[in-house]
Image 1 (cartoon, rainbow, N blue to C red):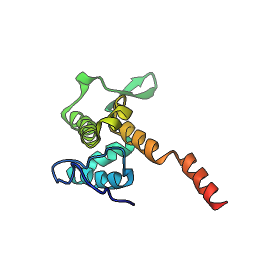
Image 2 (image 1 turned 90 degrees about the horizontal axis):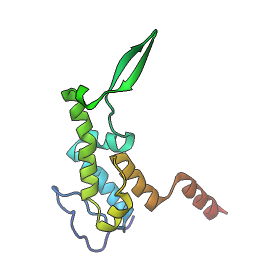
Image 3 (image 1 turned 180 degrees about the vertical axis):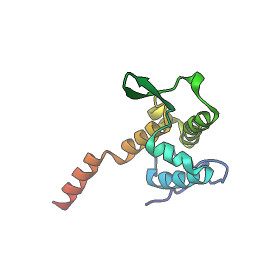
Length: 136
């Protein structure tokens, strides 16, 4: 893994590592560490997606699980939902303007992370085909 020759911003404990479109592997590892230090649950939100508060509703003999409305959120729900916004903030603050254009339509931290990963590493299918090509 190559290390960026000259680092711009981001070599701070208070600012996330800066990604300008180069050295994605370096940024990904440093961002993972930075996010886990901030709040370990944020990394779960990035990998698994945001928490969606639900409630059980009786429909005849069956019980359905449906999303709660915003008015039905309790304090615990609000705190868990806030994790996605915090993860979004850290990811967006850690990228430059060119990369921001790539993720500007993403609403969830998981979407942002997956979009950047696909753009810079490719999909599993692309990786497998590269391995096959190299082995032949």
